[in-house]
Image (cartoon, rainbow, N blue to C red; front, side, top):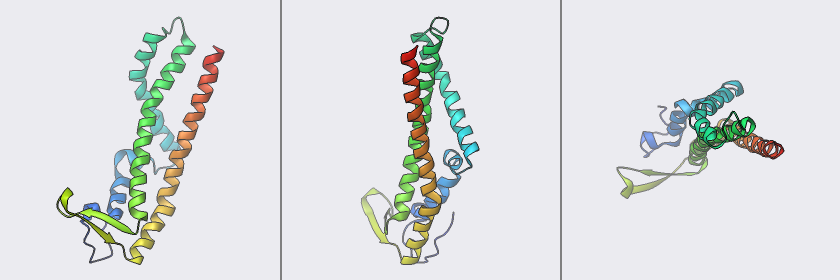
Amino acid sequence: MIRSSVSNCPVPAEQQPLNEYEELKTSWLFRDSTSDWREYITKMAWIWGLSWLVAGPVASASFPPHKYLGHFLLSGAAGATVGVVLALVRLYLGWFYVSDRLYNSTVFYEESGWYDGQIWTKPQEVLTRDRLIVTYEIKPILQRLKFTFAGLAGMFVIGTIVWHLL
């Protein structure tokens, strides 16, 4: 963990926003959202493919592939997308939480439990550092996730149009 440059910071190390950011950046699912587009899309494709293990049998029960191949493929693809959407929601909420903690001028923390919450006001140097991290590191990730949501919405619209043409 990175230690804060402020020596009088009363916030426990695991609750300091910078350390939360570093921990999130290295965790397995969140790490992939910081990589280049190819690795990111590959990870989302893997999640989508694994989601077919559940979506495929459900789709085949509703639309037998030998009779309704188009409907089977579209409903299975839409069902598998639920896994991707859940992963994206988890990614977005995690990055948004850390972004909010870094951007705010105060930090809420607990010393020993839920009953003794405190608030620490960040010094200007820490606030500036944290806001730079949000601007240059986290906002592009959140934009990527929003773009992915928009792409999925577009694919749902296209899938709906194709469905009605079958």
